[in-house]
Image 1 (tube, one colour):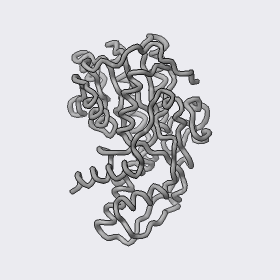
Image 2: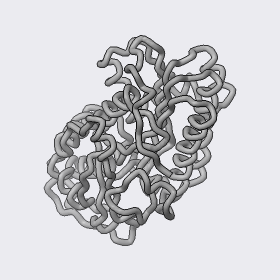
Image 3: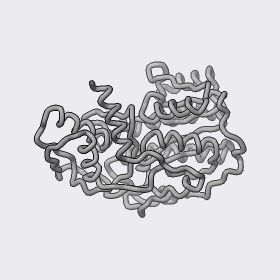
Length: 322
């Protein structure tokens, strides 16, 4: 399903003075994009919050595009959550993400947005994909059951972008980030992803001097984590340079076990109690690490080490909870 990337039609960087719509501006990814694009000299960023523009509301989305006419769009808005939320609320994950994507992509096409970056997720790849996962693995096997609904929505977005490229010739692109973390993450006790969930759990255990922390699963699955500021750098580089109908992976190319991750978080937080594992809870996919050779060939590499990124994220979390 994948083709080799080509840069032939991208001859100059994205216009820093043109209006750029960051969809999902207040989320983990959107806020990082906003910071980075501002620092890089973009002067006409557009980022309405959900109270101002509900991306699930099709007429509202089209009216907004008609009024604002963005030159470029980064579609970072999505309904997201951890393993429990995905497993117990699949209807919301597939319905809301499909509506957001279809509305934004259709409006962007109607108003001839010249550059669009659709952000997917590494969960689009098959559960049993060879590791590290190459972009060519897309659609070559069954998905992980616990987040199948979310993954299918993201796959639909990739196919939507590919269809626009084929039928209308617009140089829209897709990027597939690995597991992300950083400031502005979701630290909800039930709906967050693994890393912010661990930060909150160990922080509360330290504050309350709990003798032990119980984590889900066995701790043996391996995951890859990318600081969201590194993703923001990658997104701008891709907008400036990348053109292909194939999605492109964005990650570190390195993984560690959830147990190793737990130990790092406990150390950063300063928790010194015992750590136990509830093996009755699901592990999810055993291993998921991306092959990043394609984006590396374009000159991009992650810059933030995991331990430093976790410390930065924990400092931000403490500043928000007091």
